[in-house]
Image (cartoon, rainbow, N blue to C red; front, side, top):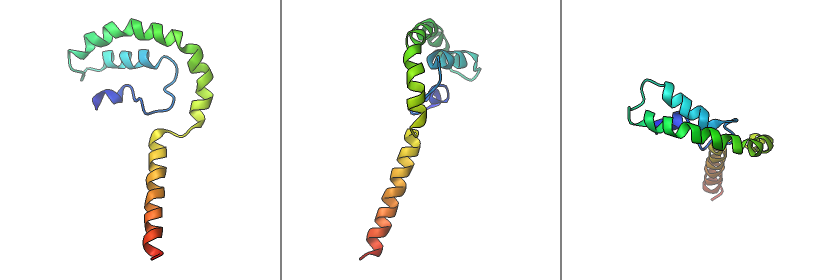
Length: 93
């Protein structure tokens, strides 16, 4: 989806003020559909407020979250494990 170019919920840590950054990127992009820009403009102050309220949580979670692999990496590892397990089962017969 095109919106994941601005905000990817699958990434483990998006940094501080991620909602505000995503709204700012949407407002600056000239390829965005015209209906989305007013919505991003309306959302910007709310994102800034909520990002400020959640700043202490982001600060304390940054180290824990950054040390974990991303969901994409975990899925790739699981798929590799499944492929290895299937190969092992087919060769052991």
